Length: 154
Image (cartoon, rainbow, N blue to C red):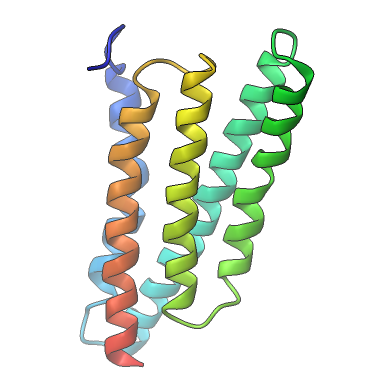
């Protein structure tokens, strides 16, 4: 069980707001109108790549803010790992469905492992991994729903 202060309410609100494009895009990808469904599906893929870049930026920022107290190899590790999410997200944009969605889902799982690593190094709040797990679960479900919609049409 997690100890420490609870997740700040503003963080919860903003996090849920960040899921809205995934939810809307996944829902609209099942809309009957093909141009709208295709646009919504591509929007989910693109937003996934953007969010992975955002998460990589968080890791870079954590590494930079903590580099004065980390062992040199841990600092280098985090800086190096921080560039992987944006590169994977960008690469997913070039893959045909459902492969792009699959790559993003795997990248979000990998990001969870990195979030856990940062928690174990005591670089993020105790509530961080729980929040990231909830958000990543929502994202991965939306990616799966969108991939199925694309597969259905394609």
